[in-house]
Amino acid sequence: MLPLRLAALASSMVLLGASTPTLSANDAQVTIDNFTFSPSKVTVPAGTRVVWINRDDIPHTVVENGDRRVLKSEPLDTGDSFSFVFSSPGTYSYFCSIHPRMQGTVVVE
View 1 (cartoon, rainbow, N blue to C red):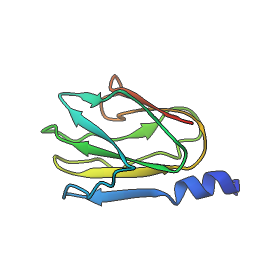
View 2: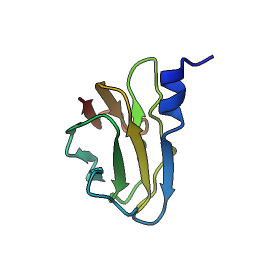
View 3: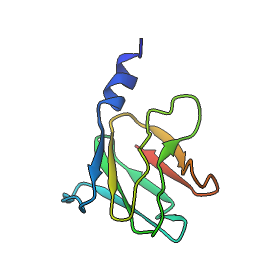
View 4: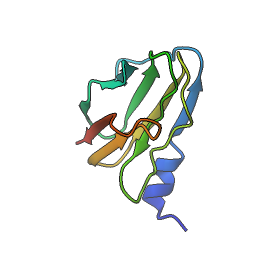
């Protein structure tokens, strides 16, 4: 059974689909383009939604490093997006499981 914290994190994942999501002023955005997450590091307060948008012409994923792997998207085609609400402070390193050299970090304060 997942601890409540991990279950809450898992329930905050959303695959947004092929259209560009509506971003609020409180959201952070990471663009995927040219085999790069940009910015590669974002720092946000707890409770922030981070949205990844694939602008590259091939699929990519967003997968948390380590054993937790709570943060995990399906493959994102061009124009697809994925969002995750980070409710707990910590450092979350992630990568593209298709292209593991692509890496990024979300620091939640």
